[in-house]
Image (tube, rainbow, N blue to C red):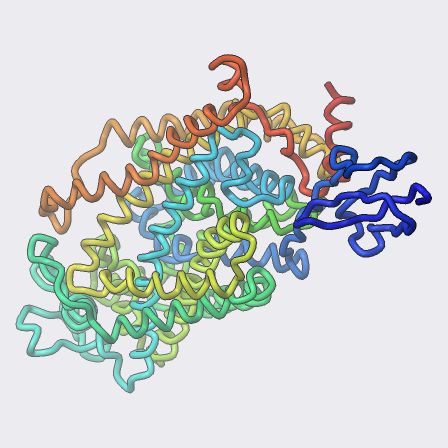
Amino acid sequence: MNGHDNPTFIGDTVFTIPGEYRRNLTQFYPGKYQQTFQTTTPATLQISDIKTEKKPPKERDSWGHGLEFLMSCIAMSVGLGNIWRFPFVALDNGGGAFVIPYLIVLLLIGKPIYFMEMVFGQFSSRGSIKVFDCVPAMRGVGVGQIVSVAIVATYYSSLMALTLNYFANSFNEILPWGSCKEEWNTTCIPSSHQENGNMTWSNSTKSSAELYFLKDVLRSKDNINDGIGEPNWTLVIFLAISWSIVFLTLIKGVRSSGKASYVLAIFPYLVLSILFVRAITLPGSLNGIKYFLTPQWDKILEIKVWYAAVTQCFFSLSVCFGNIIMYSSYNKFSHNVYRDANIVTTLDTFTSLLAGCCIFGILGNLAYELDVDDISTVVKSGSGLAFISYPDAIAKFKAFPQVFSVLFFLMLYLLGIGSNVAMMSCIMTVIRDRFKKVKNWHAALGFAIFGTLCGSIYMTPGGQSVLKLVDYYGASFIAFVLAIAELYTFSYIYGVDRFCKDIEFMLGFRPNIYWRTCWRFITPGLMSIILAYTLFTLEPLQDNGADYPQIAYIIGWCISALGLIQLPAFAIFAICKQKGDNLWEKIKGAFSPMHKWGPRDPATNAKYKEFLNSTD
């Protein structure tokens, strides 16, 4: 016996046994175990003397290039909300009177939240749930946001199915929504320019584009009280195709979705530019653009206009849904997210204004063709924004309406796919962070099947009524409440001062007074006022002027509760899990950053702790 110790494995535990041979264990398992060799020769196994190092964190997926991250953020944030929601929200709120509050809100709410979420994701390399290791008691915010995103994803692809249906029918020799049909058995105005003649718009009639959408595509009922009905199986097939595209995009996680982002982000701008050039050459288009850009000063002081501006900015940028945190968590630690946040938020605003000019140009031409002075009378709300008004306008083009229809619906489809990929990536990141053995394609395939099955309910005659209910209770309301909770968590509990130190350590500069003032006072304050206003003016949801059945309201509030209950549930769980001699110590620990909070890399994390100590 020469006093050497030989390593022996029992499971994952290493024992040292006295013996003749000595072998360096790290030669075979580098970084996993650390040996402590005895200078004496004990007669028994010495387990307590063996030190086991923590396993290094599993290498996380990352973007192939920083440009892929930027393009993915553009594809996510620049979506349907910019192309068709923004112009009509502006129309409902005084045209140019809405644009000014929207730009102000972007500077005071949109940009600060976007930059904040980018920083938290990149700094921690954590998804939208684990990022709340900074304040464990508020982890329910992340869980609730995932619930909301999952709910939105179930119906978002149903809109993609409708878009794909219109895209496929755009290749017909004659656009099917351009002409009236006898079987519709109602007063109808043909949408086609060739057939429209000198007919004028009236509230007692409907355009062929609207009747086509309601009777041929949706086969809809008057309201939810007439039942849901059976799915339109043609639309179900389009739904399955849409989910298949999402699956193929996500099959390798960010490595595949990053490559797809180049097409998803760039191509819509090409189409939008073509449509814009065409729009401004139409007779009457300048009147529509003038209406869009000219402020109506008497409406700027109305609270509802500012409320509409905040909600539009909120949902346009996709802030407080967890998507931005998820995308930035795949960045390199020192990536310049300050630059990217400014690029995306500025481009998002530019896209909204460009889309507004494009759409109001088309509507100006539509009003000119119909000899209507008030532009607001030639458009429809709700689902009709994309599937009634635009097809109606496109059908009136004198030259090549099919070409513009193909381009327009292809653009909408790619925008929708980009947003849907972001939502599913957010959910997949949470699952893979929690269950390491789950592969990307396993999660993507599971959600594609689940999404197709759940989405089939929206393909029924009553599907749009169900969609409206689910969106109201399962997306908008949950997201808004949890957004307030997120802002208070990051700005007040974690603290703006600590957050600015994190930015200084990661990016090398300290945010100026604009950012600090927005994070500390303006952004959470305005959001709180908006939430209070929403709750104060809350009214029962209606479907085409009719109340939903009582059971529908119960289901709706249960959906809301499913997302919001996560907040107190995880707070209680975090407090109970904390170590402490009394309840106050447990509460204090649950609302303080975890010991492991910080950069994911151990060496960088150690430097971060030293940096904090040196700046205290």
